[in-house]
Length: 399
Ligand SMILES: Cc1ncc(COP(=O)(O)O)c(C=O)c1O
Image (cartoon, rainbow, N blue to C red; front, side, top):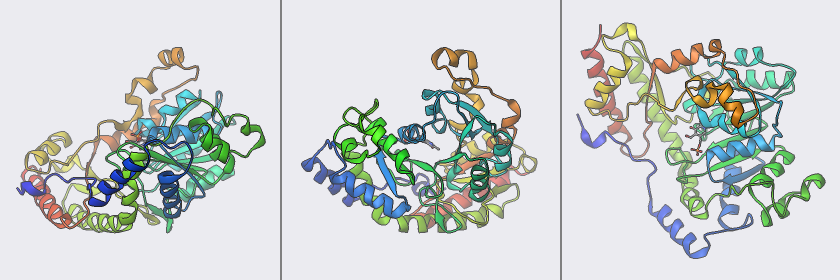
């Protein structure tokens, strides 16, 4: 075991990040409009992510809320959501009174377009998707379904910073997209997020819900929305300027980091797929993932221990990042999504959990563990160390 290459540090707190934060501390720690570091960060984000309107907010969850609010989702609307995702993809919809319809995943954990289409009714307003672990969903099929049924397509791109589908960056396809910039994410401000949309009205509504007075007065142009500018419509969701200062310098080495992560993923895939009983999850032909994590499928038939024991053995042997995701899982596990009576006392929307919409999600979750995807000079040491441990443990516990 090589202890040195067991635990990867992300993000790397570089001199550029330290000096960016220090400069920001001296300049301003609260900004009411879209000037200064907000302007610089949002401009960079729009360039890199090929989006027309984008706003920095204080978390991925509030980016998702801004998106749903911006889209005008309200009581009585049905929204098709993934059965398998992190709960914050769906939780903010409760605040708006939407009825959630859970669509099962396919073989790689991403929402299954056929399952989506089977759930469409006359009340469906939007389809929400998450590019799980950074692997893009089948955007061709999902865009086709949404355009045929006149539905909004909304992306949770929190795992997929920089992922592409057919050469085009994820987050630029749909009607709206949200990103988390939380501490573990590829681009991170510690806490933070982004919302982007090609629709000006959706953007202005999102501005209003989280950004009152100066910024809203400057940016909100729709006649029927303008009257709300001074007060906004309820919340303050601004990203902290120091958080913006943490992530801004990361934009400069983002492409290089992505290249290195992709190289790591390729080498890991070659190594993992050569081990009987393990397989990196399927990547669609048109997808170039962001590799937020490397999801690996464990075939129980090939081993004498179960996946939990297998991951424990990997951890013990020094592969400490091998992990069975806890809170990213089939959402039927959660009280929030599982208890229509309790929920309706708090919120007036209805939730119905249909077991058959979770079958693939449960199977996928029960047979998957993940690794980090390393970048930087030490990446080759991590690759060597982890592949050697995984090979050894696999041999030891093979049937
Ligand atoms: C897929 C997904 N959506 C949303 C979120 C929520 O983001 P945040 O923690 O920044 O609120 C996360 C964060 O872990 C996530 O993984």
